[in-house]
Length: 95
Image (cartoon, rainbow, N blue to C red; front, side):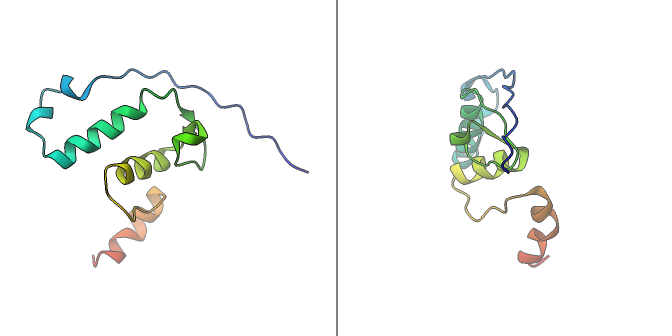
């Protein structure tokens, strides 16, 4: 027996242009890219989708959004969940 996924709720989102941020011009280029990637997501009409880390699924969960945004900004090997980033991440970085 399969269970249908719950209906996706669209989020109410407001967005701004990166250049509207007062400090944007003084940010390092890699930080500017991160800001652009994050703000681009606000224009896609995404909702919350548990377990998703891709806008192709029309929504993402919180950890998936962080992982997707950091990957899009050029950071690789980002752990999937906030739990693993908190518990496992420091051990893999020699902390």
